[in-house]
Image (cartoon, rainbow, N blue to C red; front, side, top):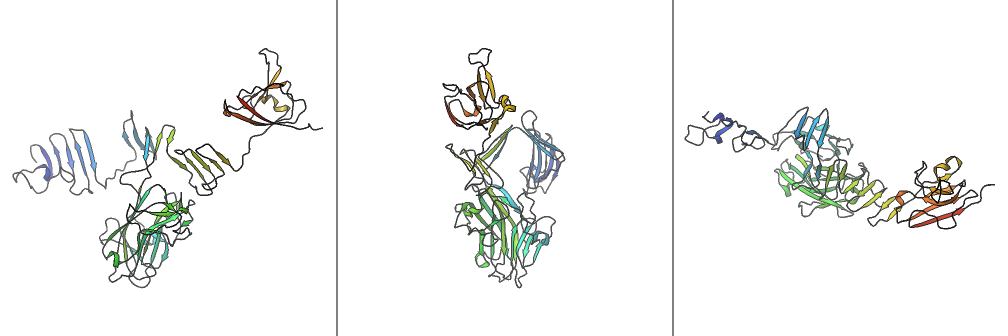
Length: 481
């Protein structure tokens, strides 16, 4: 304790050897109303332990550390007059515009497993092949299940537990692929990172593979490097047939990079972000998940795995939610593939419905529309519904009706149509046609009009449609006898 500071300190290492300086304190409350908990005044001794500080001069509160955990039933961050985030009763509310950036400087971690938690090894590594696309996938499917599996600690792990495979006796191969599938963005750069070591002495033959199992858009069909639906021959970007001869017997970190798709040349070790590998194009709009193989090809050995991590650096886009609008580049359905699903590329101005290779409906950026089949609304005008499609009026503007206007835009209670059959004749000659508003004021409007009834008359001069041009396909049929 001094005249300015009240708190606790370690051994006095500065000053006159009697009075402690701020650098010696682990916590203090000073005369200005500021307080500090953890480390010393320059920051925590171990940054992962964190520290908590209030600066009464700046009126600022600092909570720092990688293990900060705030658990509350309700929270409110921000200002009610500008923007805020609040949560209660299982709901989260965001006030103000929200922008999601698709590219960050260091990327976003989209998968991380250090095998911490309460699951046993047998619960984590199972024969259950149950991949999930909604984030609920549990553990790893064991494609080859010959070696022993256990969790150990105190082996130099960074955190969590070590997954240990094999006992260096007989067949110790373990081939595992996660059941948690991650949406694959062909425009993003991905980094797969694993930390492992081949622990058993004199084991130079056992091989390690680390990479990605790819899935098609259905989330079930596997897509390996040559497009086959198989766990084998997948995309081993981080480690491919690694042994102690190449990696030694100590802990080693392997990184693999990949981006985009290709029809061939996929997979293989790609350990530099300047030379990323590719996923087979069959996984376009599909999913990825990590795969790890220890003691490959039925070898005896012991391999310890510390963690698996996947980082994504976005493809350069962003999504902005503002009020009742969403600003983004591409909208895709969850099932998008070559022959199913929908894709709306807003930046390009294109639309595909029914798959990407041969869609049933497509709009190009030039405005060309292609459809497998178009069925338009067709109306038969008969006495019961004629009032919805015949409008009578005085051509001269008076009060005595002498003309008929065909109503195609639904304004008098009928259906909107450009395909009409007249099974009843109107009372007066047809002199005008009211088109749907989306036909455009200076466009060519195409009406298919079939005359079934006798007595239908058109003006012997121009039919006034209200548009610059009018193309009428008239087909006359004899009335039924």
